[in-house]
Length: 120
Image (cartoon, rainbow, N blue to C red):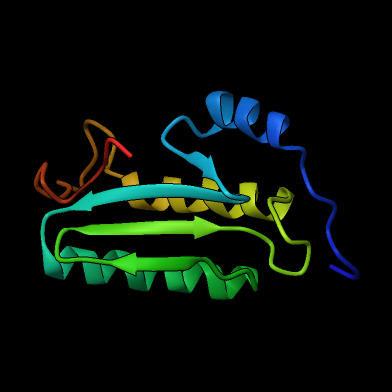
């Protein structure tokens, strides 16, 4: 995308998060989300998957990695805040992190403790 993507006003970001990404928050010009995982192996798998998505999108979040958590922070650095790029990547991360096979699928899916949203 040539040039700096336009910023989304803070009020609009908050309103859109409520409707589009209810597990996400905004703070100091960043979209934020914490995912709880089942422990270190699933944390690493989630980090690698987010890395793959981000690399493919050429848009890279800040990650904080703990034993059973992955904290994601997104903003468009060139623009100095939240843009459509951040919303688009947040939606892809959300789908990936919380994906489970649908009921009746041939895929069993992971244990319930695999990855879930958190309070944050």
